[in-house]
Image (tube, rainbow, N blue to C red):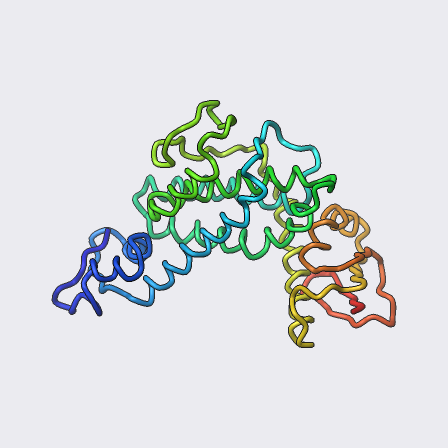
Length: 293
């Protein structure tokens, strides 16, 4: 990793003091932000960011625990939603890219790519999957559990070389002892487990494009709520999505459960034109949103 520059002062405090104050993983996060052999100054700001990332990973794991502790995936569910397919495609592209970066010793880029995916997973996918996860009787609950299990486990493994302590703690708590693993055999440590492998079955460019549209819709609805001083958890009576392309409307309807969850809409309708009495939002795509509070 990068070396601490004595001639430039090194930073606000010695590394051991940083570790005691912010944790070893947070300091490793900073250290992995600089390429091999490059001079660097201890950045308390980056270490704080590393601490926030570690806390977020821990909180996501705590949230996921209630849905994964007794869950053992055995097959790919047939009921994967649009968001599930979107995430799996992005996840397998991530595995492919990050693996090549680590092989090239470009751990700073590997960290950045994994972190970018993780925040998208935490801030967007989980919001799309929450209603299915909380509803024990939802027909697509298993699909959400399956996606959550594999996505979280994969992200932990990709982060493990950079953040060895928090990833090991979560791995031990959630995944060790599960009767199902990719190899069929349990491992005692995340650091001796198999590295994630790309599964080309999940590559789906169409799902990626449509999933990005779901995010654009969710962002538009979030902005609508924010501008009206409504909490993001405020339920909406109705959300309409208008698109002239009938195939696009049909494809988006496959993500109905995802949209209802992330927008908190009690009803989502897919039409050629919006009802004139609804408040309207025009997106950058060919979609217009109508909202009834």
